[in-house]
Length: 326
Ligand code: AVI
Image (tube, rainbow, N blue to C red; front, side):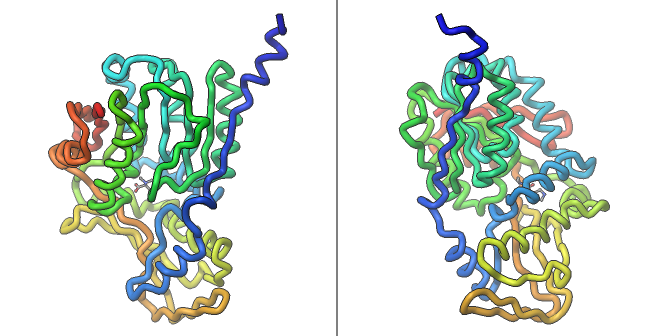
């Protein structure tokens, strides 16, 4: 019999697979988005190592209560959620970030495998190593992947009923038609005996939403502007952060918070073989964050092919956690 002190570190070693190159070429994607008449940067490029940490700091802000409210809802209803899902499935965490939200479910869902998927490869690799040390009894697989276009599950993902976990209202970062297509893909990942556990931020007072995305400490501004540094690293461009400022506001017509970076002065940005000029006041659209109504969430999930949608909310109806059966 092999002693446990030898086996434990072996069990604790998580697997890590990098599938980023297989999906999208960031240079081509960024160049195309920046050269559109209305320039944009896809929000997934926020999450370089500094961006991921700034996002963690945002989640600590009193003005940005999304994650705390979601956690309180999950804590309040986890017993019921776990009973509906049943124990022993494969927990697939899309946009796993620091993996903390999923880790809180381990004791309740007792997953046979935890699959953490995120585009931020270095950050994910660090976090699953720490997670594995804390949870040596769990099988952990990290996948670096841009799952916004396709969700590719390698053969290392175990068999069994799947629970797709997509918390934090990241679904709000898709346009409505893309959100529907994305949920249809998660429905396919669930198979016929799986579940989706989804976090969604709900529409609320415009002043609260404006403050949540333009906080007085300027953490969200730093998060937004840092995307320019990540673009420089990926594209070889020469954005100077000092030439740009943060703009964020709730747009009620589209039920979304918009974030932009706005040129403080006339600027020309260059990257290999190409340049683009921006006049003072021109904006690059960096993120939409759609806000939902409870009925809108139910309809979206039903249209994506889910059934028996259960919504859990806080007393102020600020956030909802949806559990949908495939
Ligand atoms: C990750 N995502 C759901 C966040 C949001 O609220 O849209 C990203 C964020 N952007 C600014 N603050 C937080």
